Length: 399
Image (cartoon, rainbow, N blue to C red; front, side):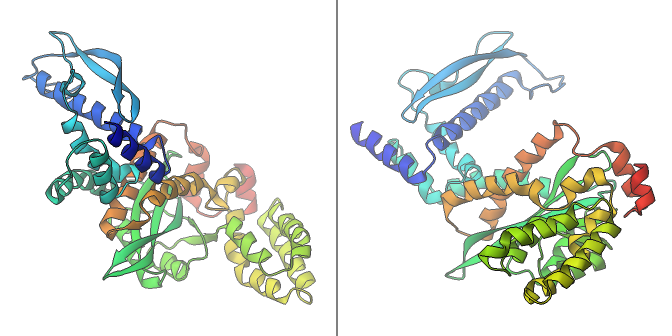
């Protein structure tokens, strides 16, 4: 017993997330109880079925004392009879729950090897490859259904951002980009539309990804917000006929890299004077003045500004009430941080399918959360953009 506890403690320290195991066990245990009660009732929760034999009657809280600490559970109650999970009974091993840990482990960010070590540390036997395959197949089915669902209606704004991960390929460890696509629909709500693992940022790969979204029904895109990815602008114009907004935050980093430390504050203030302009015309006028002012001392910066002008200021052609959301990829910052937090535990993915499995599951959870929160944009302003596309100054003022 002491050796098991020491091994588990060492494993948790190695995982660098002491709450991760408790979260995994809680998810798995609650899911197992739900499945057990479905069988006893002969129907899923809220399902209308002629074959139903019992009904749920709320939940009771139960603390499950495990070697990973106390785990809070919600045990379903029945109108007829009672239910008590087998793995909570005295002297009954939680083997069924621990066998299922591998499934949630992929979602929570643990590799197969780490999960195997975890099970051994808790006094259980190792997990076979066949078990891993069966359990992961269930996640893949749900994730793939979500990532390949039909897209209905118009999606005026589309955000694209990449998180770089390491994966084994052909005996080597390579870096790949996990591209996440998020868009706003005509109801003003955000949804995760798709995910792709790309070996490079060549136009051909962007073309393939955007066409996959279009084939599923993506239409009505007026503006694509992304970093300065190679090949994206050409693919976006060809496949979706959309304008591309270069992430303003990333552009600022690129711009400041062109000047010395002493001039960074001055350049930052100067660029913000253009971004703070009330109209697209005023922003372009100030931009031209800055290019001229920087031309002699900061030629590299002036050249960058000249190349990026149309892309960085594209958002100014849309309603001012949307500028905060569409000038950068910042709306995806929380999403990317969560992806990094989970994937850092793994370090190196065994294959690209594992990346899609984990990242896709996280996107599914985020999409469900957005579905019950308030609208990201108002119906009226989004409807105007869908009807007119990029707006002129008079149209923007009327919104």
